[in-house]
Length: 122
Length: 107
Image (tube, rainbow over the protein chains, first blue to last red):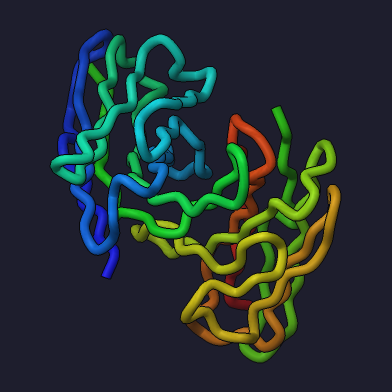
């Protein structure tokens, strides 16, 4: 059974940093691209970042480019999101997602974690 | 960026009704269109991928159709557990984008 367990969320001041983790199990982690998707309170879904299985390719939404860094440790089946220079508008539930590859740079989200809440406020 | 627009934004229906939700892309996305269901306080769940393929375990009352820019999600006979918010999502190119969501409520 695929399981994705996020951790690391919490309250942080504007301008601060936070590192999210996602522990994966139930599949061969290194074989799959992974992604982070967020959802602000009462709002819709927003894709944040994606990383290939071998970590040689990464992609970011314009809203987080230059501030967030996605990475993974395939020896520990863990995905990360380093978030720097946080803003109030980054407040959201952050979901870790497993991706199924359809073709070159074409994926869909087939499994989601339960999410971890990040609140940016003074 | 490819914009995804869903209609309606909200919908009231009764158990047993047939419901259709539409999703329009700002440019052709071929068949790279997926649908998700989200219940309050829960993570989204994949229902349909590449327009019409049902994810394992999803009831057959859910179906999808379309191509290019216009797509639909149909629930043939609403069940109580289907009242939720539905999102479409394009996989054609990054940035990956979602529709704004359609909230399906009980009439």
